[in-house]
Every structure is written in structure tokens, then in C-alpha cells.
Image (tube, rainbow, N blue to C red; front, side, top):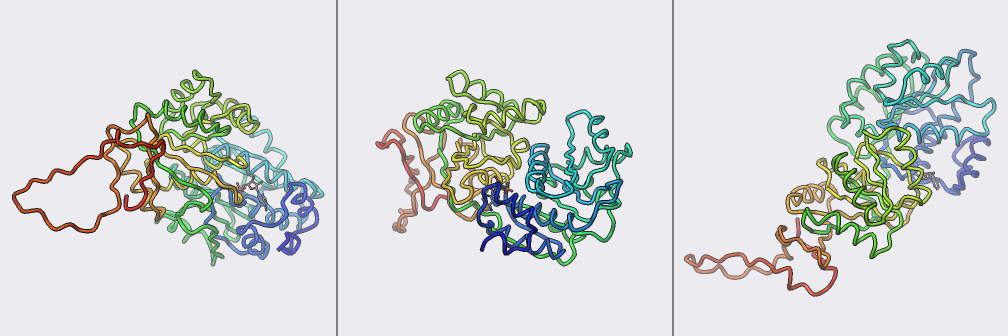
Length: 423
Ligand code: AMP
């Protein structure tokens, strides 16, 4: 089904053609007609599904139907968890609205940078405001922006906003909006908290689910390399060099860890940059653009900083450490295997993370292949259980049969696969 059948106006169809999109993604073909018809929306979709265009295009269509009042009050409010995502959504709004006449005014506001320039930019009014919740509340308290004319509210990556503790801020913001409005909520995962939030917020929403709940994209091959904690950095360098990976996104659990790993990679001539909350906005932006341009081979990120990063055709995502919250695993690997491309999500798993690995497997409902790389075998990881053999007759009661640990040195191939009953 081509885009032209969805009911979008010509200027938007031209922008879609400029972007090189030929057919709508599944979320777009469902979300666009629903939003155009004015419905509330509850969409289960991760980054990479085309969700941004899925809400931006119909919102712009509806905005352009009405003429602008001279003081340009905020008519569309898009809340996102992070600055990176806010910036990307802002770029999308501008990209898809490029042929609209008159042009819509879009502003992006987030914390971590000076508030005054943002206040100045909001002064002349804006049609579409993309914001992180905390900074938006600061701007409201300084009378820099009013939300009483908002027609559409979008909560993008709502699960992440809740994980980041934004629930109270979101509720405060929602209380300032007109009662009659359109609400669109996007979330990759659906916890009890999200459900609670949606009940008070959405009115008879159209529900869209493009990937089965809490599952990983099918085009992503998932592997867990069992290794020693101390060997992770050298194993990562080995994997990057031997496989000649050119664009790798690596997740660490701490900002410190991200910095240390980045230094180690650079020392062995693998160009890397870290992106996390302690980095200035400028450093984050330049790391991201260097990575996109192929000048930086490895981007080392924490979950929060990487949230929503949109990089086309990312072939490898590495979990240097498994996330504490299993749902973050789904978010992380949602960055690879996009638009039908094959991707690999690799986790370096040390002994203390086996429990986390099992929790991830429980969430996604599949077993992740366990492998080891010769020279980097895990000394301290109990080998995964091989498929259960047929039950042997019980040994006599007095025999203390010790489990026989599998010697790693017995392995002969470079890559050893243990799939099967490893939950
Ligand atoms: P998103 O899930 O919104 O982060 O989008 C992921 C990526 O898909 C972005 O790089 C978009 O430019 C791209 N994209 C969105 N819609 C389409 C489409 N219909 N065809 C091809 N690429 C698309």
C-alpha cells in the first residue's frame, strides 16, 4: 500500500518522497489513519519501527488544516525522555513539514543547557514543542510557555520516561493541558505503571502493536559470549578487529565504565567515543554525528544517553554489561536489525550476570545462544547446561555423585554454541 492511500496532504507526501520512503512501515499504515481521524493512540513500538513519522505526519496534516493564530500558542506537545530523542523528533518534524505553507514553527527544549536561549526562542510562539519533562516544567514556572491551547499530546518512549522517574512531572504537565485533546502514547514495553498512566490519560485509544510485546526484533541474531569479567575489554577488541565491524554501539552500565572502555579501545586504535549524561550536549552531539558519519567506529553509551538514538543500518549492538532491567535489553537491541536488515546483538556475559541473562530470556521468551571464543573462555562461568539427557536410573543412595564440570580446554572449535535448554 503506497503512502498516497493514507490520506496525507500533498506537501507531506512530497516530504516523504524526499526522505526516500516508498511504503509505510506497519506502524505507519496503522497509526496515520487513526491519528488523522482524531483518535487517541496506544502504540507498542520500539525505535526503528518508523514510529516518529507515524505520529509526526498525521499531526502535521491536522495542524495545517487550521490557520495559525498570530500569537502561535503551542498546539502540539511532544514529550520525550532524553535530549537526544527530543532533538531527533524535532528534526523529523522539520523534515516532514518542510513543504507546508506557511511553515510551522517547531522548538526543542531539554535540560543540561542554558535555559535563557530557550526562553528567547519560545517568545514568538511555537506550533510544535518537543520537550523533556523537567525542562518544560522549568520553562512553565518561568512563564516562558503556556500549554492551554495544546490540541495534541504525544508521550514518546513513555516507558523510558517512567523508568527515569518522570511520572510526577508528566502528571503535572498533563494537568495544565486542555481537557479536550488528542493523546498519543508510544512505548516499547508495557509495565503495570504504563498501564496505570494510560488509563487516566487516553480516551478509547486505538491500540497498535507492531512487534509482539516485549519481544526482540526477529531480524536480530542474539548471542551471549560467556567470558571473564576481566577479559571483556580485550574480547571486545578481538571481536571488532577479527570481524572487521565498522559501526558498533556498545552499552555499559555506568558512565565511568563507558569512559574507561572508550580509552581502552582508542589505545588499540579502535576509534571510539563515549556518550552519557556527564558529557556536554556538544560532546554528545559530535560523538553521535562522528559515529553516523563513520569517523567513529565504536560508540560507547549508557542506556539513558542512547535512548532513542536513530542510526540507520546499525549492524552490531554489544551489551558490554547486561542491563539491570531486562526491558532495557529490548530497547538496546531495538537499535539493530532495522527495516528488515539483519543485525547482531551480542552480550558479553560474566559469571555474575547469568541471572540477568535468564531474566532477559524470560522476558523475550526465547533462549539466547551461549557461545565462547577461544582464548577468552570463561573460567568462572559454570558452562551452560547442555540439553537435558534422557533420565538415567537413579544412582544408589550412598553414592555422592559430583557434577562433572565441563573443561573449557576440551573445546576445539573457535566458536562454541550452546543453545537448547539453557534457561
Ligand atoms: P523511528 O522508529 O521513528 O526512530 O525511525 C527509524 C528510521 O526509519 C528513521 O531513520 C526513519 O528515517 C526511517 N523510516 C521511517 N519511515 C520509513 C519508511 N516508511 N520507509 C523507510 N524508512 C523509514
